[in-house]
Amino acid sequence: MIKEKSSILYSRAKKVMPGGVNSPVRAFNSVGGEPIFIKSAKGSKIIDVDGNQYIDYVGSWGPLIFGHAHPRIVEAVTRQSEMGTSYGASTELEIELAEKVVDAVPSIEVVRMVNSGTEAVMSALRLARGFTGRDKIVKFEGCYHGHGDSLLVKAGSGLASLGTPECPGIVSCLAEKTLNLPFNDAGAVSNLFQKEGADIAALIVEPIAGNMGVIPPKPGFLETLREETKKAGALLIFDEVITGFRVSVGGAQKLFGVTPDITCLGKIIGGGLPVGAYGGCKEVMDHISPVGSVYQAGTLSGNPLAMAAGNVMLDLLSESNVYDLLEEKSKRLCSGLEKNTKDLGVATQFTRVGSMFSNFFTDQVVKNFESVKTCDTEFFKRYFNGLLDENIYIAPSQFEAGFMSAIHSDNEIDQTIEASFKALKAAQS
Ligand code: HOZ
Image 1 (cartoon, rainbow, N blue to C red):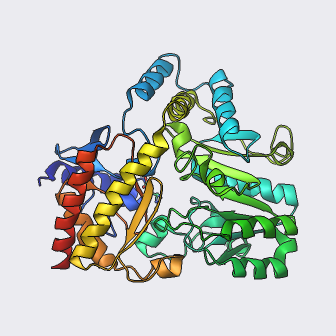
Image 2: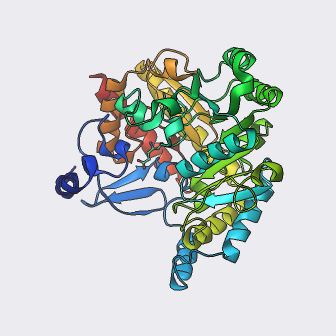
């Protein structure tokens, strides 16, 4: 496969951007080789600058539930851009999107739009601290909530991919306020809350972990989080930046029937444009400025392009029975991938909730960050590159999720299964 133009762009990029990228995992550091540079994308496929086409299971890290460049989203963004790209003032589009989010997500009565998942989480933490008058935050090892200072401690995603346990530059007195627990360990949560519950402002969790690969919550785990936070007067925050509108219209909270106090959203609600949001009940959200005194603002918050795209995305979701379709397609893919590993005797653990999935190259049952770290990352590296050679694009890290779209055809899925057999075989030798 020729990747000459990508290679030239990478050399150029490295001169003017740290590592040649604007987000570390894109540099392919953990899989070796050089990153591909994308020229365009349509439906289930991305095309690089050398003209290579790949079936894409990254989907811009989750938002593209209807594939790339859906005509109705393109049309909405084009129409809006002709009317202006940003006003820094209020629009009807924001109200429409907020109404749709409030309708869909059980915990949200009032929502504030921001520009990214990171911003949503940072703001939600400030709100929780402002609301409770407490400082401490509880999170789980391997859960990633963006790169805000309080949460970049034992985080998954890019840090896990690069093998970086901690991030320099975070003020130690802030990091000290972040308490880390093993994901899926309800006993550890109860113990901690017994000792420190009165000082805890919030517990934040990805209800389905998606940034150390996909790890579903054990039965009863989310319920324990709800009970312990309630008892302690702390807020429960669900980071549904990935799972919101991905695993059901109401997100993981609807799927599992556990309602948090604050929910963070992003990705899908912007239809692939930069967006984030955080919301909760009116009592809590009324602490946000200008009603309350917890300050948070932004010129591009609720920007009309993202709102236009997000509105169409949520309309598309409400018009179709897409979740059944996604389930069917994801099951087809993952069963095929699993059969390959069994046939070839490759130790692999498969996890999946709806259209988000992972295959971990380990013989250990995966339930938290410790178990995920037992993966054979060298094997993954060879597998990733084998797939890329077969024109299949998955996340360039063992510790990221795969995403199915409604637009992947059965034919493409079968092609992927076939390619995975070859890539596994090549990775074994
Ligand atoms: N680690 C991020 C996703 N979980 C990567 C995002 C990006 O590189 O675009």
